[in-house]
Length: 480
Image 1 (cartoon, rainbow, N blue to C red):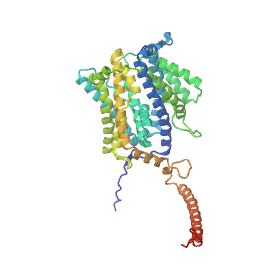
Image 2: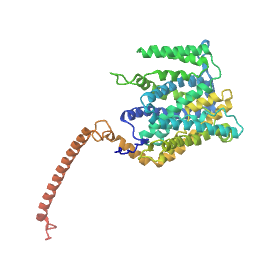
Image 3: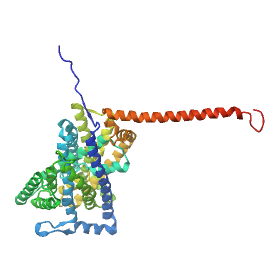
């Protein structure tokens, strides 16, 4: 007799996260949200500083002020230090995030990794294609093809914080994973396409430093006083090699161990990330924004954004390309794999998230500077295009997300409810008999309290009825 055929289970797309993953994502996004708000403030401050006539010259003077040891090839401008130095901290955290996702997060399981990876790759390929076609069709330069490829997770979360949307944790986690894959691809793009000269001696020194860094980690050496000086040496050698210095940050982040061993409550990578992430989100990225987003804005300049093919391509890449790429990649994955959309969400939610992914800032500004290095005017125009495209994407996403906000609030309330007050959301304890016993005790105590109240009310009612006959005819001493 043949065995009965079973229907293969379908994985739920944007389904509920496991409790440990949900806790990690919540902690990470909380810091990124605060950092995103600081990023918005820094960007607005840069625009004001660069566009107020009385302050414009001081902005240029500060941005171009050079300092650092010239003998080591490190006498850089303030803006250059922000882009190459401070962003190395940002990419260091990105490297740790990527390592964690690969060994302990969603990217560890190939089946679970398919969705965010395909969505991220499509969300980079389509904007690059849109930007290139727009530029070439208009007779412009296609050098900026990579500018609209990256999603800025901090900026996107800042938008969510400002509009107050209670986006479910699964969608936030998808956005985070999407940004991590974006960052990895952006790193590869920077390393491959924006390295025009290589000093092999300096590069060899940087690689040797990374080997020493790896050996020290594997032998259990501890102490910031060992790793920070070594990291600075590696960064300086990488900068002088001609490869973008932020690659050093990524490489060191990928070397940290992100799995726990016996007796450890937290992996070294997660512990370091917890310490460094506030520095990245709260200082490094906002300072980079302060000295990169200060472009001159005028009616004519904004008009040029939509008429010049290079800048129009960036805007369309962020607003149209990102939406089509992320949504299309997600739909194709669900269509041709066993993934199915969570019952609590609709494709309208995925579309809104895809629009939000068009918010690009930090990495887009960095690639814009690298793509048009030497052409200050076009660099500023591309920066203005990044800001314009990101604002349009943020505005459109705000409208779409607000239309579904009531549903999001209900889902978040369901995720947060903890009636037994044990610190674990009830939704994660439905299969635990102890949870149901605790809830039974809670309901029994509530039932006993309601029975007592009912008995008291009934007793009061009886006393009231007993008093009525004796007073029924007592109204101004007249008979009733």
